[in-house]
Length: 302
Image 1 (cartoon, rainbow, N blue to C red):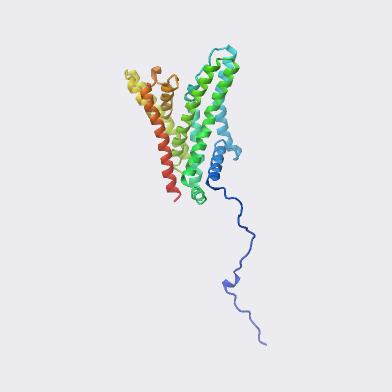
Image 2 (image 1 turned 90 degrees about the vertical axis):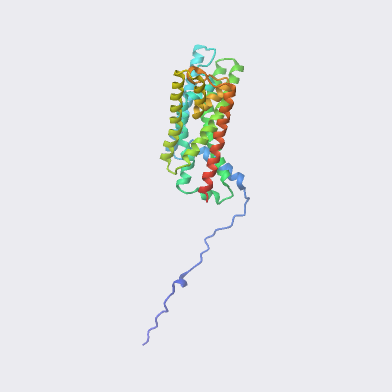
């Protein structure tokens, strides 16, 4: 009796098309502005660990507390001793706390950009209705805003405490406003430099070390050279050397235009004319940082 054998099945005969229920999106298209705002919001929240693990919140929150505690202590001392003025000027606070600010920038600038570079997600951003300028502006603005919160919060503590201590309202308001102008410029400058350095490498550890090196080594070198110049009686050289460090650059601007006392050797800051050069140098560094970031991400997004 003959046995029938089934015909061999070809690979193509097993191909099936399954409808798994995907539907096309027919809702509103929110466009670039919404994407830019969302990226800014997400980056700003990430700068303080919000929306991330508890471990990610520890360092930024700790640094925020460290920035505010000395201000609270100064207020308590002023109230207890019935002082007629605060122990420290508003414009001097960020300069004194520069180590904390530099550590914050070093920890959060790589967090903002290095992960996108490491996991190659930047081209995915640009595959949506968002351009290089949108990404750079959102990241720049987010870190600058986070730094402004970090540096302005203790000034607010000082201001409120000064009013509670019944210090002169006009003087305290003027000093507080000058302090806000100073930390705004500082936030933009430090954010730009931190992001440029961090965007060079996708390795977060290398980015942290590089940012710390740029901010601390430059300040140490400038301070040393200023001390040498002052010891040799070269006061003019002392003021021009201050152009080569971010924190001394801010110090020169506020001592020239905001009535702040200078941390330069001998307490002699730049004159008004020299201060104009400091302002141009600071704005030039901010613009250069933005330009370098744009150039970097144009290459990454290709």
